[in-house]
Length: 71
Image 1 (cartoon, rainbow, N blue to C red):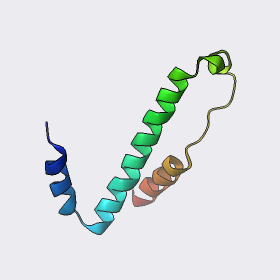
Image 2: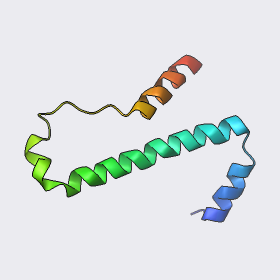
Image 3: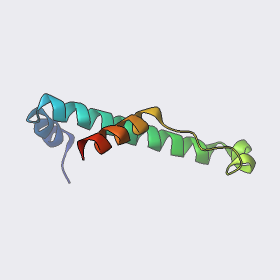
Image 4: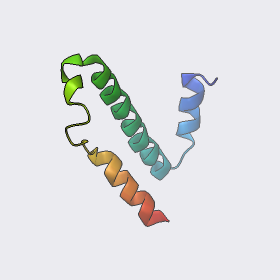
């Protein structure tokens, strides 16, 4: 498994565009993890889970559109 310093070194070698893309995708990953942890820790809303419409992550939506444009 790579260490933080090894990964940081690899990121430094990416182009600015690649670094920005990585940053955006990491932000989505962290948001999803935080949302997932929030859902599992908030028991008082469990009875409503599945009833309320799913929220759309704006950044993930934007990244998905960009990926489609690149295809």
